[in-house]
Amino acid sequence: MPFLRATSTLALIGGAAALLAPCGPKLTEFAAWFARPARLPFAWQALTAAQEGGDAAEAFARGQQILSLLPSWTTGHAAFAYRFVLTQDTRGSAPEVAEQAERRLQVALAWLEQARAAAGARELDLLHSAAFLAPIACRQFPGLEERLPAGGAAAITDACFAEAERLFPTAAVREQRLFHFPTLAAALLAEGQRAAAASLLREAVERAPETRDQDLAREWQERVAEVARRLAGEPVPMDAVFADPRFEPLWPHLR
Image 1: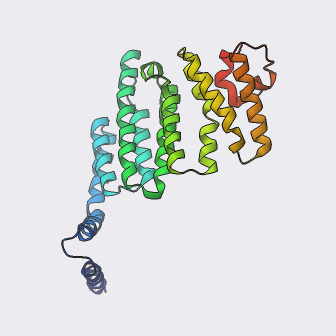
Image 2 (image 1 turned 180 degrees about the vertical axis):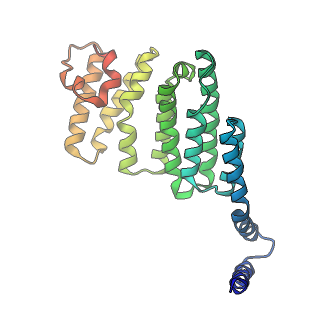
Image 3 (image 1 turned 45 degrees about the vertical axis):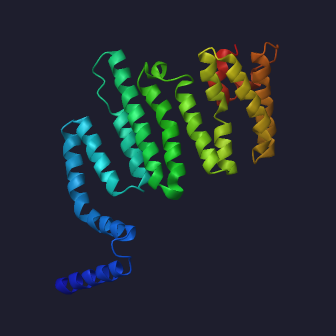
């Protein structure tokens, strides 16, 4: 029976290969796909050994090897990227840890960016994974935020949301970016970019009606307009804004 099963399997593989154009890209893809089950166990063993041995660089390389065999496995790409960034050694000085965290974050974001090419319909998952990685890393590693370009982690998140909104122009994706605007505005204000923050808030007011829940849209529009007027120097009551956790990143700039 095992021999018959093996023979049947080979026959099916041969039949499938016969349907492909010889020497064409489909045949190459088929051969790569068929080789994966044989290579994956060894790749997983090597990754486990690297992780147990505490060699982060080796673990990263082994993770890349596995993901090269499973290029469309978006959950795997995200998991490896997060693990690479968030499990680094923190025994050095604070500046050294922040510098290492910055390097790892840039590598992980580049990794996720590269993985988008094979993600297909799951590309949105990778963009969201990249969007949240930077702020999580900044919370874990003091000093990392200061090493990032203008706007910090919030700007990285917004760039990912903007790309997601461009590629997947659905109401849900648009709203996700819209409700991120207070966080990005706060990051801009922290760096003294008041004009850029004001422009962002004006955009939030203009885009509020796009929200599917119209009651929520009106409330959001009112709150954002109050924040914008307060930042412009008007004596606007902030009770409703301070009671709304969505605006918490802006609170220090409104008191």
